[in-house]
Image 1 (spheres, rainbow, N blue to C red):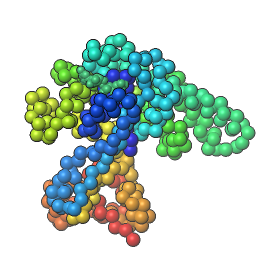
Image 2: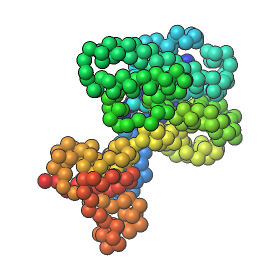
Image 3: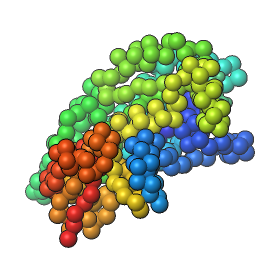
Image 4: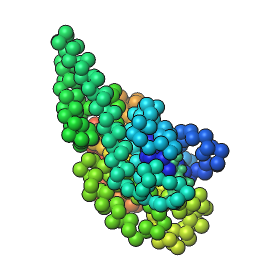
Length: 360
Ligand SMILES: Nc1nc2c(ncn2[C@@H]2O[C@H](COP(=O)(O)OP(=O)(O)OP(=O)(O)O)[C@@H](O)[C@H]2O)c(=O)[nH]1
Ligand SMILES: [Mg+2]
């Protein structure tokens, strides 16, 4: 799972990257203007709790890869500056975090000359939309010729989908607003359309805007919600400092500033939800671990996330929900209380399920 950080120059992408990955990039690295990549462990209090209980040899969290995408040139702000390399790099990301600047700082002039988050969201969205549209127009032309020559149901279906996409984009709607049949999704997956990717807009607010945070987020959400965009916010400058402190100092600092939860925890969780992901848990004296899967997977598919053998030789899943486990205190107590179940391969795995896979 890979999330790309995108946004206009000086919006705070690298700041957010350093906050979430808890890394510190030195001046020389920053000056190189390279793409930064890091895996981020998904904090999960349930895994901690299981580890406390089972005292395993190994505790494993799931992780997401974050990419600080470069490609928009400094000081350039006409739309032509969205280079092919930038768009190409964004294509391979599973989802996007769009960092939008809401802080003012004369040292780093905003490339558009003023602070206007709503406008900035639109700039990138429009650029992505035009890129998808160009690709679709190109492809439709070729497909029409092909379909005339050969009777191929798949190609015909593809043409129908792309024509629908074209209409949507021409109405200035991103593709993620369309309801789609999973079979159609599979058919057009190879195109990696930009406006089909889930987007979380992250407003980069200045320290003084603490009290306005919820209002500013709600305003943008109101405006862009119907385009399938989620909105969150962070305080770039102070939260980056926070991420680089020892835990104790950070706790003190957060109290002083009235921050309840660090951006690290909150935004990572928002990203997780945006991607439609859930976690199930495995446990024992060897290992307690969280696994990431898409929502609505069957038990045998979830088993496949652990190992393909477990999917192929799946018999049944023993299931206890984490909340029930905490309530009753042990697997045996869950059994006694009727909270332990044996499920077949069609069972839809829920977030927080503790699974033991029986296999042949
Ligand atoms: N005052 C203030 N400065 C910030 C804030 N967030 C980031 N900055 C500063 O703004 C400058 C640009 O931030 P970056 O994180 O490098 O922005 P970027 O989007 O990665 O920029 P490019 O990679 O050059 O496109 C840095 O010097 C940051 O320290 C903030 O919330 N408040
Ligand atoms: Mg940067």
